[in-house]
Amino acid sequence: MPASRAERDAERARDDLRHMRRAVQLALRGDTSPNPRVGAVVVRHGEVVGKGYHERAGGPHAEVNALRDAGKRARGATLYVTLEPCNHHGRTPPCTEAVIASGVKRVVVGSVDRHPHVPGSADRLRAAGITVEVGVGGAESDELVRSFWKHLTTGLPYVCLKAAVTLDGRMATRTGDSRWITSLESRREAHRLRADSDAVLVGVGTVLADDPQLDVRHVRGRNPLRVVLDTKLRTPPSAKLLLPGGAETLIVHAPDALKARAKALVAAGASLLAVPRGPGGVDLDAAMRALGARHVVRLLVEGGGNVHGALLDAGLADHASIFVAPVVVGDAQAPAFASGRGSDTMAGAYRLEAPRVRRRGPDVWMDGPLQQDRTED
Image 1: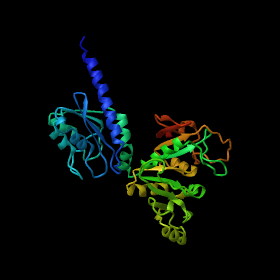
Image 2: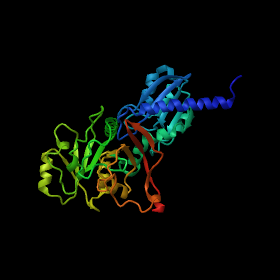
Image 3: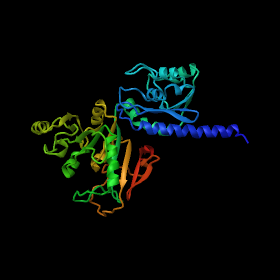
Image 4: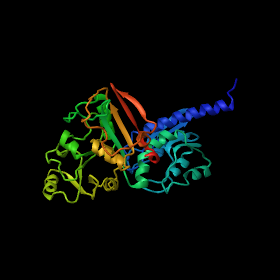
C-alpha cells in the first residue's frame, strides 16, 4: 500500500532533521571567531553530494564550500544550512547569489540570522523559485550561534563557568590541593573547552595557589588568550602562564596598582589592562567589555570560587560546564564552586537550562545555559 501524505511528510521531516544534524556536526569543525560557526550539506535524491563548513573568519562560507563540493550535482538538490544565508557584500559575496546560481530547488535553514544586513535573504531565494523552510533543527542550530548573538548584541563575551567539583561542591581541599578531583577523561574534555574558547580566565588566587599554564595539552587545538583578574598585580613574574612560547597573557588590574609590579610583569611577557575598581576588585562589567572589544566571543572562566561567585552576582555568567567527581571532601572550609552573595531562596538560584548530562570516565559532566528567576529573589 502506498504511503499516505502524512507518512511521506513525517519521513521527510525525519530526513530533514537528520541532514541538519549532520550540518551541525560539520559546523563544529570551524575555527571562525569572531564570526559564527555554520555547516551545510547538499542532498540529492536522498544522497549527500556535498558538504562544507565555515572554516575561518574571512574564508568562504559553509554554503559556498558545500555547493563547490557538490558541483553540478547541486542542481535540483536540497541545501541544508545551519544559519540563514547572508545577503550582503562583506569579505565575501552574498551567499544567496551562490545558492541561486547553483540550481538547488530547496533550502532548509536551521537558525534565522538576526544580523541587521541579512533580512531579505529568504525572500530573495523564494523570488528565484527556490523553496525555503526555516527552523528545522532550530535548537541545535541556535546553540551554534548563541555566543555570537550575545557578543553581537551586547559587545560582551559569552561567559562559561567551568569547574571540576566533588559531590559536596568543593574545588579543592582546605589546603588548596585539587590534583586531581576528576579523571583524565574529564580533563581532556576540559581542554577541548579551552581549545573551543577565545580566552580562558582565572583570578589571581588560582594563579597563586595552582600556578596553572592554562594551555591546551590533552587534545589538539589552539591555545586561547589567558586572562588573569589581578587587582593589585600580585601575579609572580615567574608564573607558568608567562613562560615564553605560550599564548598571550593579559592581566586585568586596577589603575592604582604598583608601577614596579607592572614593569616586572611586562618584562616577563605579560600584557596589562587597567580597568576601574568595582566591589571587591576590578569592575567586572568593564573587564568584560574590554575583552569583548578585543573580539573575545567565547570566554571560559576556570575560577576560583570568588570569581565564579562575583560573575554570578553581577549577572555576567551565561553558561556552566561542571565536572562532578564521585568524591567527598566533607570539609566546610574547603573552597566551593561559587562564593558570592548568592540567593536567599531556591527560587532565585541559578539553574542549568535543559542541561546535557554525560559521563566522562567515573565523572558526570553537566553543561548548559544558566537561568535565574530574579522575580523570586
